[in-house]
Amino acid sequence: MTDHADLLANLADIDPQSPLAAARHTRSAATEHAQGSYDVLFGQDDKDFPLAERYWFATRVAGWHGQQALEHHYEQLSGELSDTPRIQEAEAFARRLTFEPVEAAPQHIAHLTLAGWSERGIVTLAQLVAFVSFQSRLLAGLHLLQDQEVTTSHEPVLAGRWHNAPLTASGKTALTAFTQQELGWEPWLVAKPLTAFTPDEQATLARNGHSDSDYFRLLGRNLPLLEQRTLTDKGIFYTAGGLPRAERELAATVVSKVNGCIYCASVHARKASQLSKQNSDVERLLQTAPGAVLSTGQPARWQAIIDFSAALSVTPPRATQQQISALRDLALDELALLDVVQSTAFFAWANRLMLTLGEPFVPAE
Image (cartoon, rainbow, N blue to C red; front, side):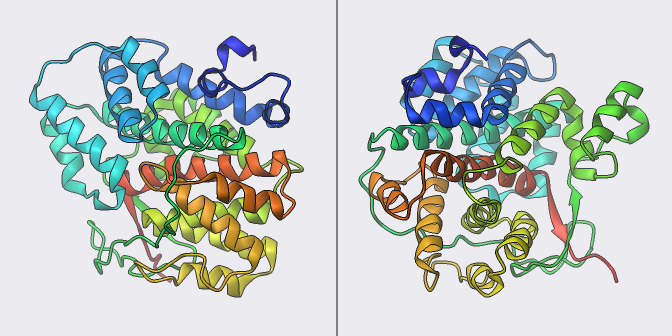
């Protein structure tokens, strides 16, 4: 990938000869497919969600995150939109997804449908808001890794709240606490049937292990974007060297606690436990009550990772140079630091889709 095609490198003004540039080159798959996701989202017009609307919403989301350079980038490409019920409903959806994704409920999907949004348009709107949330945190982290202060807040981030209804929308047993148990997930918008995909599209789903998943067949309503997102995920979490995989999974779990995403936390806490053999520490994190400091009682290294990941996860991000320095003092090199940033930023994207498009349930025994 050429430098001019790397939007985040340009916005963060990364020196091509710097250790950070070298680390991003080592993580070339994550770098390439983060850009690829941007290229798919903003590459061509679409009757379900026109390009002019996409730029307008991206401008709003970047602004809500306090990322002025990213906001300016999208604003230059955006125009004014008519204040229609379609746009009003989508803006309310985007704001909720940005600031309080745990507030999402099935009726919000219904409101979008009544306002004229197609199923594909709703999926792409959710993806756009979640992706710009990812971009914003990644950009904040890239600035911090270049010794540029993003914020001066040093208040610890607390565990967020989560859903506590006993039943899902369809009447299945819902989750009222965080767990490492394997869970099911049901969509609030109908997943696209496998038979509705072309043979080539079915092959793409199968290649990524997505054929039997309601979640991924729902996201498959915009399959090119799903594929780029999947490749970004693999480039961040399934790569050698740098931060141990267990601690990347720890970061994913932290973000899920901040956002109240029980499903994502169950998957990634389980992986963190299996890989680290620190089950009691993972359980301590999972059981942190709403309003309590997430890093309390953790080993020093995990405490530093948790504090940073949690601070990068709020909106706008509150991560600090002091937190980066604490991680450097624990011997995290540039690649490991980039892994913390990218693992955290990616789950700003993942949680927002899981929380907004459906909900977890306890599988029947």
